[in-house]
Length: 207
Image (cartoon, rainbow, N blue to C red; front, side, top):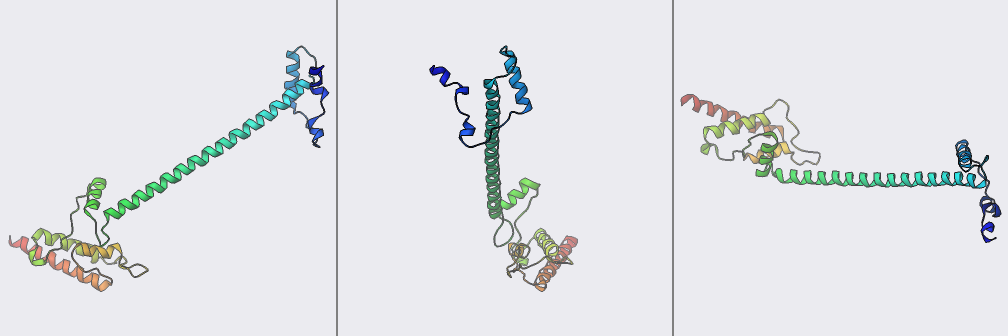
């Protein structure tokens, strides 16, 4: 008796008790219930067969929902890791750039090594000696730099929006020249470079 009292057909419909409308099985669930009945030797599915099919639908929906939540959580974690990785890479790049660039102008020794490693360029420090103390090769180097940087037809900006010298202007400091803030000052450095190159050529011709 105790067992029959717990049977589903002995209990009230839980959806009706909760004030909800009953749900009907789909065509696929009905076919599955009929197949289950045939396997049990019954011609038609009974209440238990139908309940099993309805329960499978709920379980499948819950499982699908759980998988969706896990997928979203995994995507968020992956996105967070990628975002952190990008931020770390940008921070490292900024730090490396800060150590490679001399804030007064030009590159540091670490910056020159980085260029050699990345591009195979063999950069050397700028020539800051007086003209009377320069070797012919140093005259050629400094003269070539001055003409290339400040003798071009159209000069890059020498100051930014806040009136501070740009990296292009600050490179003059690395070569022992005053940092130009006007085109006229930049042209004076270029003229000095022309004189150094002319002197270098005279020395080479007389040698």
